Length: 382
Length: 188
Ligand SMILES: NC(=O)c1ccc[n+]([C@@H]2O[C@H](COP(=O)([O-])OP(=O)(O)OC[C@H]3O[C@@H](n4cnc5c(N)ncnc54)[C@H](O)[C@@H]3O)[C@@H](O)[C@H]2O)c1
Ligand SMILES: [Zn+2]
Ligand SMILES: [Zn+2]
Image 1 (spheres, rainbow over the protein chains, first blue to last red):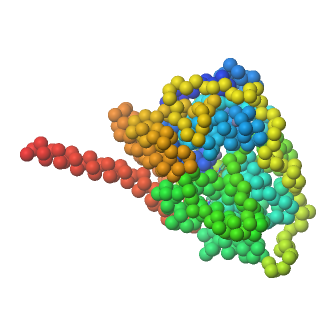
Image 2 (spheres, chains in turn yellow, green):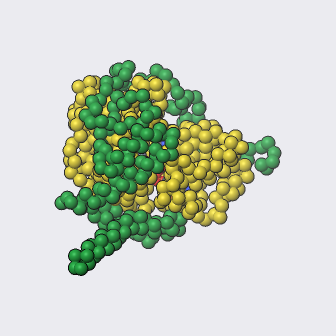
Image 3 (cartoon, rainbow over the protein chains, first blue to last red):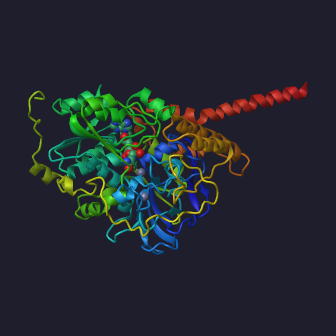
């Protein structure tokens, strides 16, 4: 089969690989029909995530058709059209039994501090991902769901991560009616978080980024006020000014490890890999929140230390909430919202890239060229 | 205003927001949101086991020493190999996830892996090609200048080619020098 393969930082190519095989009785092999590139993939692409091995295939957002099933699989049959959450999880360990699907203890031998994720380095379990023609799906009775008839293929792909994550991030922010919500980052996760904040009754939503086309999308798709941080000497002061000098009730970090805006922080982390991630946006979030407020962290950081301003968080009495999103828990309600016409996820898709051109796709998305917001990947076989 | 008890007034009333934004307030009740409370027992997951069956360990599989056992399922993407494999294996065996050394060794092994893989690629019919593999050829057709206007990241994007091409230039210099030295030695 054809598959995207990592060749070292900033380098990928498409190679011929063996079709994955059933390794566990509850595995399925899925033929991928649409996949996506995520902001999280950029952390791998830039070489920030420890134990990202040359030869591995990325991709954790995908929809496909069941191609083969293991002997213990009951809920799927060959030919079913499935959407698969980015989390790999067993359904019964201590954590899964409590609904913490993104924190499963039974799928990642390489680390206890993170669950299993498709195509996301050995630090999340060493599974190959879905930017390929076929992918192995462990615990096929637990993760995947049959794509409802009424759902569009591209909307389904966005449900497997970005939409579910943004929606989850807004929930972790503890939004109550009339709250002022600030979202750092107008990528897919930030846009969906901003849009979700309204569902939870936000009174104002402000989105911060430096990419004009994304801020434009924040205004039109997410109905938000926007701030371009390059146009302010100090974005924290601007946040205070905009919120009557109190700070925002709820702040969401939808940026993560490669945050820009402070050359030293960015270069020491994203380029020199001396920090687990550049905490610029997280620190802005902490400083922009009002005392007693909540910061919800959706941005991903590596396992090495980062220079986070915990003193401010403590002195301000902030609540910090965070996790990888337990995707499938969000689905029933998200599906209702989509059917009610409240959410149309693929409005943010800007690029559709054939698998054979995925190296260009990564470059365009990574360098944010051509107004790229969300790129999908289409394997040629489908 | 921040110095009194009042919350600053909002620009729009709930009625105005409901009229303007599809679905405003659909999830108003925090207790009725899918991730509330964070931990819930008894959700239907589809699993029909208490402890999942163990996946076969076809070759020795490295694991965190914070795990008591090899997990029932695991990825088989790229097994350990070469010098990077030695470093990775040591990082897993010797240091817990709590130790910086664990992660710094893994990051170092990633760099070693890239070098080893580039070198071995030259012995295959498909050597690494930094031009096609970095996707930079897409620049020409995707508005390289206009796309970068008014942004903060072009300042350090100039470092990207250095990170990518730097090691290749360095390697070329080393190879050139050693070949030249060898040729000179052979002549004398
Ligand atoms: N928690 C989860 O389950 C989960 C799931 C998916 C993605 N993520 C993480 O969420 C983050 C965002 O993902 P994405 O797909 O939207 O990525 P993305 O790269 O498309 O978006 C990030 C955005 O942040 C902007 N940005 C950079 N520095 C900033 C700053 N200092 N202030 C404000 N904005 C800044 C960038 O311009 C960009 O628009 C990533 O870190 C990703 O790893 C987490
Ligand atoms: Zn993702
Ligand atoms: Zn589990």
